[in-house]
Length: 147
Image (cartoon, rainbow, N blue to C red; front, side, top):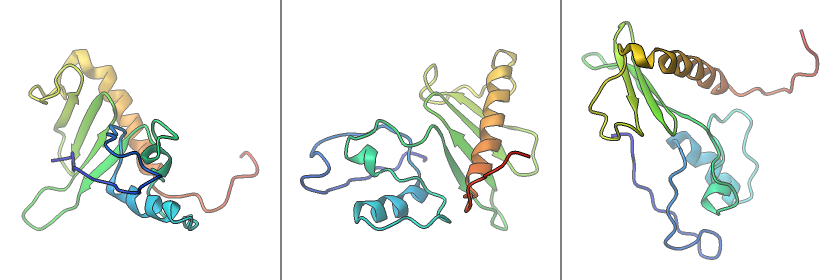
């Protein structure tokens, strides 16, 4: 559900037949397409420019990606943070969730949310999740002094 196949074609710029496993989100498409066209990316965009990854100039452009499903009257409202190794899903107004170790359990069969052996991973993923949410709000002006 969270892996969307995507094909890019740009002869002479994107190598034919190459595959990329770097983390990417749909919000990355607009800044990436703008960059590919040499158009400045507005500072208010949430996405990350993936063009250097697509053209093999960089291995990755982000360390994690947030996927969200917004509330509808009779459906779930959730957010998921995915890293190279783990995936955590938080449901709005609920104390349960999902935590998967994508290396040890690539099929995501075992939910590690309440597993004491994964308590440290869960805490680290929550911290990364909070930071990922903060980063989604672009800083329009650089900070020039500490406070």
